[in-house]
Length: 135
Image 1 (cartoon, rainbow, N blue to C red):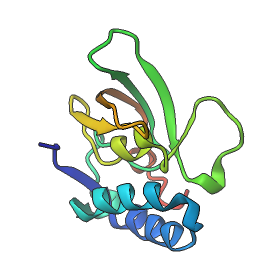
Image 2: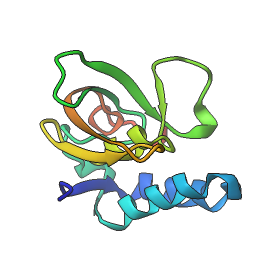
Image 3: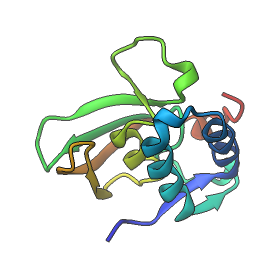
């Protein structure tokens, strides 16, 4: 069972608009993100708890309970600039991270069908926490 997730209505609106413009070749990524958004609770951006992964958050996470942590910024495709620490929301890991709280874990399917478990260890930066609603 997947943990409950929380998304700001502002992120939801931006993601909906992004999904509407995706090419057919990205149908699988679109469908996975739509499924996640369909089960998300909505919050006002200024009421977003500081321990929830939102768009443009810098997140520390690990795979399959490993000690090795990865730190990346959850990014819209249009903002990807080749920075290796950016993670597109359209990747399986990006979609899995959205809306999770620090301490949450989620099992997710990779494109090859294998499962991985992702655990959120910390949020180094969250735009809402800093009052940045229009990023």
